[in-house]
Length: 490
Image 1 (cartoon, rainbow, N blue to C red):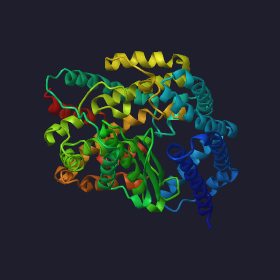
Image 2: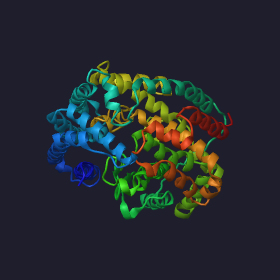
Image 3: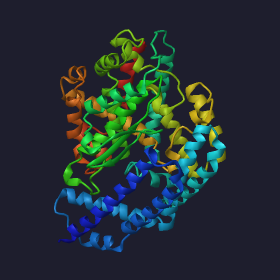
Image 4: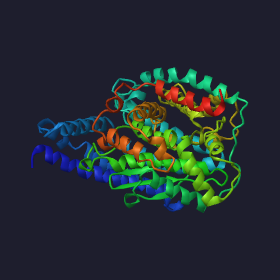
């Protein structure tokens, strides 16, 4: 074998072990026995130690010095391996294992605290996670900005300052649109009755199929917080059901299918290599959000979904397709990010971005977090948080030390706005197909322009290649103005 081939063989085994660790996390969220948490934490810590040892193996440095890439894709493989090698070297093995062990335990404590609406139950464990995260961020930053160092795990080449500028441009028009919509006198119906879980899951399965999810290489389960896990030939998703809110199940499913089909559609030549997964979490979110919103919540597709609802549940209190479209896109100042409409969603994310930057920087401490959260929420949404489960305890991310993840949700919406604009310029007949439950004109374009490339290109470059322009918040804002201006007559 050439030096390049030796390195890639070693890397393939490391990637495979990483997939195993991901499967342990999936198991913990779905089917793991409740009493297994302590042991699972030890298992996660042990496997993280193995992976850390492989990722810092001195041979990688030697191989990188000598390897000659056979093509442009090989050059990118070497670049990704070098980035991971150098970043992992900066983090002590014990710190990495401690984080894996602590976050595994913290996840359970978070779930219990959320169920009990008791932030004080979670705060000590969150403090442990935050202390370890700050230590990791300092090690990775090497004198630079700690938050930027964490951000690289989710959005390579992005900085907090760049995101702050983009989000600053988003915020005024979002707030102005929110005020216009909520001040509208037009009545938009709400879906308000009980829907059996079996029927919700049956439609959920149809939606997954409609958006191209290949169940031969995946499965759908239930979890408290829906997520997608895995890549290549084993990509699993979860959803959740809510008795009086079937759209939660349906759009959680479509959202996670967006993530999952991205992973399933990456070029198989990249399987179990550094290029064999999504370009970034921002690009990943662009796929899940365009599936969920620009396609799944479109007037054309909700017409098809309305017919499936009537087939499954009979008359359910919504008179026609137009009312159903409006109901699915109904705006209200809800507490929960994952249930937020498109107008409010990014305001949820911008708040979390600011809070977690302050946490990492030490400007905000765990004991003061609920007050900071509730004050900001009241300012942005005009309502007061009622219970911690609807406030600071609603998201799983900080229990898992995913600091730097939240801004990629809004960045994904920005990317999705750019992609939707370009896609509808290049592809005809999208809405006609969506009205029949056929997403392929849109999803095939996304597969060609984005998904097949995996991590071949850096995020901004990938979006620019697909759309012909640098990412901008303008297409998203124009889309939101047009859509909700029409629904609410404002």
